[in-house]
Amino acid sequence: MLQYILVLLVIVLVVSAQRIKSKKLPKLHEEIKTQFSYIPFIGHAHHFFGSSEDRMNRLKELAYQAYKNKHGIVNVWLGNTLYYGISDPEAAKLLLKSYLDKGPLSRLAHHLIGDGSIFSSVDTWRHRRRILCHATASKHTNNFMEIFERNSNVLVQQLARVAGKGDVSCFDFVYSCSLNSSCETEFGECVQENSEHTFRQAFIEYYNNLSVRPFQFWLHNDAVYRWMPVYRKQVKARNIIHDFVTKLIQRRKNALKSTHQENHKLIYFDAKGNNKTESYTELLMKYSGGDKGYSDTELLEESLMMLMASTDTSTIAICFTLILLSQYRDVQEKIYKEIHSVVGDSGRITLNDINKLEYLDAVIKESLRLYPPVPVIIRYSDKDFELPSGLQVCKGDHLVIHIWGIHRNPQYWGKDAEEFQPERFLNVTPQQLYAFIPFSYGTRNCAGVRHAMIFLKTTLANIIHKYHIEPPTSYECENPLRVKFVVTMKHVHDYKLQMRSRV
Image 1: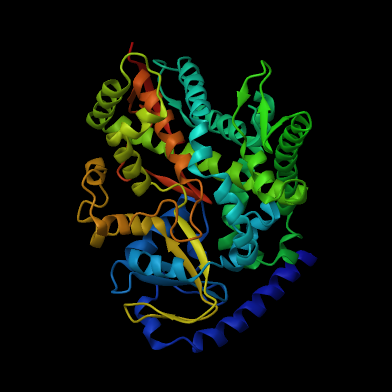
Image 2: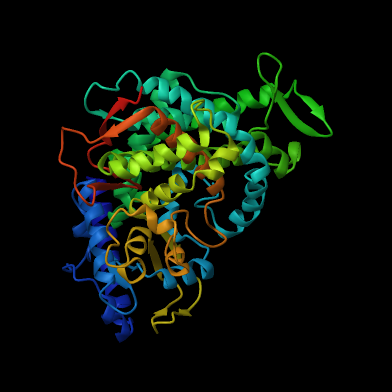
């Protein structure tokens, strides 16, 4: 009973604050108000109730509404908080460069990753970003090619079990490959199947619950949220995730106690005594100051952040690309011919080969344009700022950079913005590149872009080299694909397709 009284009290306070704030809004903001119906007390939040697909559909609608005004922006109230959805790339890039704070909404993720760089305060991020950039530099990332190649070949072998046997979801297969590749690059080892399954289930449950909370403004307050039954589920899932990563870090630290040191460079060895590349965990420890660097908590936060960011988003990007290729067989065959011309019959892909796969690169970018794994990102304004369109962003405003909307903005991508056309990235214009931000933009963008692209190209090249990707029979393929919002963007039909061996 007490939990419902607390929720009611929060709603009353929210409404009072909302009425005061709404009266202060400049008239200019009337031009960008959403067409969604407004209800006192909750604003427009009721439009985001329902399923994860419903929430993604509402986000899409906000983008389409934004296209209709000169600002490319639309506002929406969630309780007493006003959010600006930005679908104009010029405005988005200016705001991403001007504002680095991700605001109160990002704090909802602190329960899981603490001060991990993605959602940390600006001061914490500045310090950790420098370390992260050193760790993810090309000279280190390039050394992981052998790991990506080996794990993608394991994936190809696993897919043989389901090839030619009707519809199958490719997600679990790709996720396992992505997770093992991430664990090897971060901790120097693969994970066992049972622990992988437990981690994945906890991760999925946590993300599903987390994706609802931003739209339930009455649960933004941590004191209220802790009274909710879902909070206990989140604690349980978080503990499983933390335990999984902590054990991997500890095993890597134990291995380093007996490591060889060469000019103060940490090197670890496999069971046969072969020299292996430094893992990200070792690099984070080294660049943060060695024994005087990251604490156990800081190392957990950064390692967890890297693991979750690389595993889930890479899996989603690969799976969406495969779904698109199942529908566009001509594109798929062009990729196959390019791979065969570069790699030959051996099938072994090198880093030099990856750089030559230009059409595959264009296909991946077009897939990321249409189906960015992270469809929206957030910022919080700490100062007044006037956009070129004349719209005034005020200190304390909440900004939602609508990547999905920017990537489909017809003003930049043309009338065929909704169509899958990989060739556009072979002759991409500066204006279009300006409107392509799947890895965010500015100094707070994704530090692992090169890591991601090498992994995506290696894995997709190996799959396409061995298999025909064909449409499913269990559902009707649609354009655009049906998608849902669960923090990241995923396929409603769970990435089901058919595979057939090319041999």
